[in-house]
Length: 265
Image 1 (cartoon, helix red, strand yellow):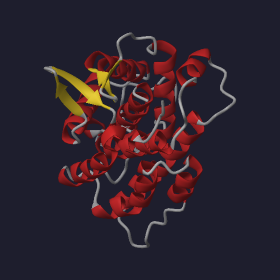
Image 2 (image 1 turned 60 degrees about the vertical axis):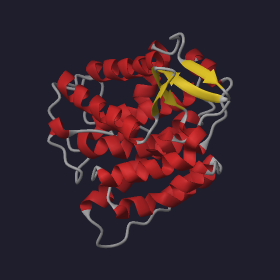
Image 3 (image 1 turned 180 degrees about the vertical axis):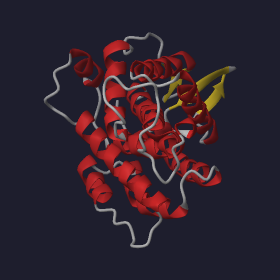
């Protein structure tokens, strides 16, 4: 069993915050955030994952394995979504903003062909089964929806490819942190790359922290092989969701990517 990529991809969303693609971390009116004000995408990702592990991990019938292919059941997917939704509500985020972010997540799962109709029921397929196809689907979705521009994709692509090839987390981390934004790039590119780096490094620290002692975390990880694929997927998901919905979108898409890939590993 392995855990892999959706971090760089994980993963997402923001119109009602009056937050644009040029400013993913702008403070927004969410009715007050009791835990922390305007967290970064990385903080939100880690906190949402932690909330799932502490409160929603023991859901039964999360996965289906057939012909060496692992699927997340619709019930398992909804359990992850409910966890993220409740985490955001606990932070004081308005329900309509959460709903808009979740709609973007649905669009992403359909648009990248992760959601499948199998035997008359809907499942979310483990993206590692189709990882090179998914890589292209991610790029095409981001461009067709005008979420990311080609400059951002070109800058993150070496890290995306390396994670898909399952190079070591340290090797991919070096690629991510060595991304140099060309002088004269748009504010949009600067913002997206900075968020990409932030969530990748936060996810890296979260999943590879050997000092964690929470029992639920240990249980979840006991058969998991730490991998660059999951960590990168988190970051990739975050910049999709965060493009329109700031840290709320980042929490929705980045955390969903992390949890879903861990559950299907």
